[in-house]
Image (cartoon, rainbow over all chains, first blue to last red; front, side):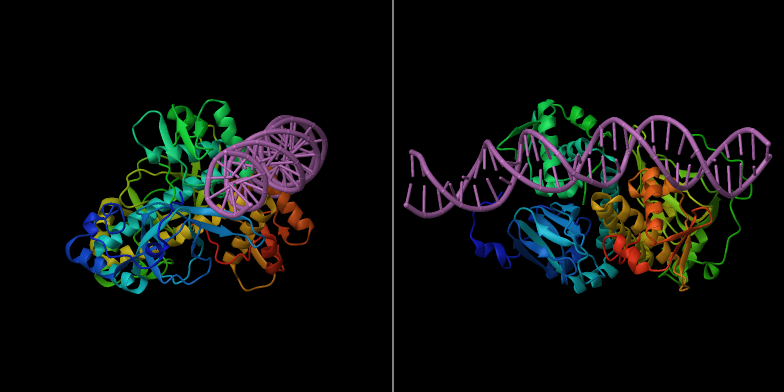
Length: 250
Length: 250
DNA sequence: CGTCTGCTTGAGACATTTCAATACGCGTGG
DNA sequence: CCACGCGTATTGAAATGTCTCAAGCAGACG
């Protein structure tokens, strides 16, 4: 991660981009709209970027926009007063940030890698929702997918062992990277701390389970533990406890 | 799993009811619609009831309808192949069951108490969504609320201690019962097994923590442990670990 | 009055956390 | 080029919270 690049371009508004060239055009909230609807969306959009590690919104803060992740990876976390933290969402390109109808963020939003968002002014977006059925319909579909993902994650948090949790996450990352090349290979977007936060474990337990999975020849590591290789995804999925279908957190 | 259907009046279709007299009219998916839209909804609705303990839909089963809970309490559960079970949703009156655009249930749906649903044929409901913006908008709103609730529950499952989990659930139930009478009193809709399933714990741990909370004078019990009393909700919320605002599972 | 089901209680086993130390990768500055 | 320091990851040993297994108890119902 953390490539070096002029901070100037990173932070301010970026040049408006042609939606048809957008990498998430067919998957984001705009996926199903076209013509006049798309024009209205394009007219209210703007781009903004955050560097890895930066906070996009604090728990309880005003969040004056909604938007789509164009590039990078962000997390949603909720925390207890004594400092315990649980990740409750992992946002990847095309995922939607913010909630129409609400002005404050119920969780902290953090950039894990460098992130670029395609922002929409919240009020104008809400107005659009009323008479742009394709946008509203796509947003509903995406929300229901996230709900399913959240519920799969509840099963993990409530019932899976540490080994199963780690295997589940690794399988997810490997599957998403999903080049058909063998062996499967993926660079982890999340460090150990973020993984622990996601999995409801401590850093140490995550580390131990990754080591154990390596020792048992289920996975291999490269690049100082930031890259995972897997020759036999089926074996990893067995370690994950369920067949592993369809899990994909939002 | 064997469908047992010995029960008589409970299962068949019930007489159609006037929507304006419906107890969930102003909270369910129909809340914001009126006039022609409401007429269309009313025209496709039917009622059906299940007795406490009955299965409404199995994991992976075809679910030919969507609908609203009119009366009673149902749960969504997901399970691992070796039998471990995690509840992932607790549905109360006005909550929505099923998902437009999907024909099979991703979780098992079970009646906890006697339950009555107001059903809509899935295909006709989907058609309605396209040109009934008030229904679509309300459904989006409800889905986003459920997503928030699911994420709060992820914090509980990932980071809270057994005592905090039990306190959180009891506070939720007491708050929902919410008669302003003091002391706060509520009959638990969930038995110990369902509570354990919800909280990611075992029955024994739930029982022990309830006993401990009683021993420490945070709550009192009546009716053989099925009714909870609380003189000091603030104290219970402290035990719950966070301030306890807004948590309400869907 | 016995049986069933749901709830409670106890004692020991076990997984994960906690606390502490060490190792690694990497950019910086001498 | 090496020494240093810093953040991140690994490993170890002990503490602890929850689970497991097993028994006992209470109320509901025939």
